[in-house]
Image 1 (cartoon, rainbow, N blue to C red):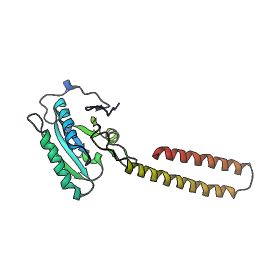
Image 2: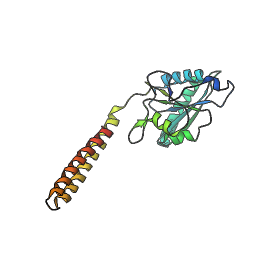
Image 3: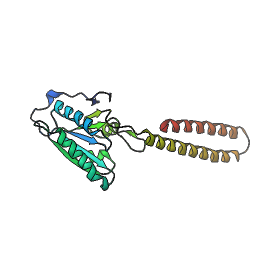
Image 4: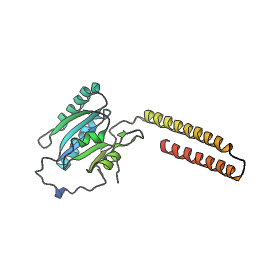
Length: 213
């Protein structure tokens, strides 16, 4: 179970140090860096983790357009220089896109482990990136928390917009359905269908608002 509050955390696995050779140079931490990360604090935590696990580091950045690539690359190069010493080597890679899973897959090797931040979210529903990685990649995922500032205004605006849009759509669809029901002969079947349509409408609105609320 993930508990993103502590500095070094594992996700749904237990690391057995005795199962790995001390002379395995292929073992890496693939660190997924968002543009909003606190570079100094993130670098310190990643360096501590790399030393604890005796791994090298790959800083992987993902930007949505080529214009952001140079600034993101400079950020990662700076972080790389801060972690390197006699025991830890670091490399940098920047990709253009929005899909972290695809970006990681193209660089993933046997023995690699992934490091992401608890605050990183992705997709239309803004799900935690750690959950997406665990569901799609067969590799350990470490989660670091408290290193990326929250931006609640954007996510709240998106959730509210989707919530209202869906609710209005459900109400409009239910209204059209109820008009069709009203055109049926007036008997017990019409009344039953009207009651059912109202109940379904309420259930759909409740479920939709729970999803995006």
